[in-house]
Image (cartoon, rainbow, N blue to C red; front, side):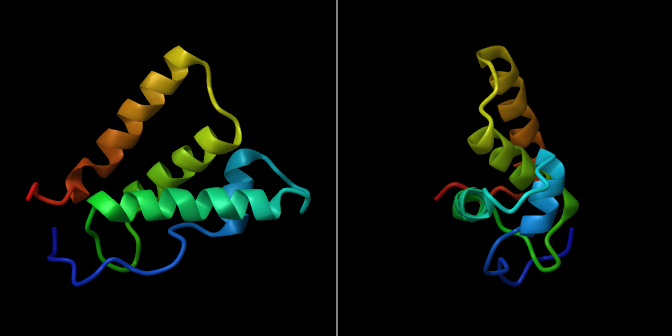
Length: 97
């Protein structure tokens, strides 16, 4: 993996991609989905380092986090989803200080 220079600013996925992932076709919840995209993006940036363009693993983890916020899964599915998100982001973890 190449040494990343800095984590790109802004949302890690587009609103259109998140809506496609969620199966949302109307514009009624755009503000809410945008809020969830920004929250997931900010959370990922606090503990992970990657360059630009945003790696597919990071985009996929962002989409899964947005989905969790938009439509929370049942407890068992939530636990599995968290493991998947962790596995996707593991290569980009920052070292403990």
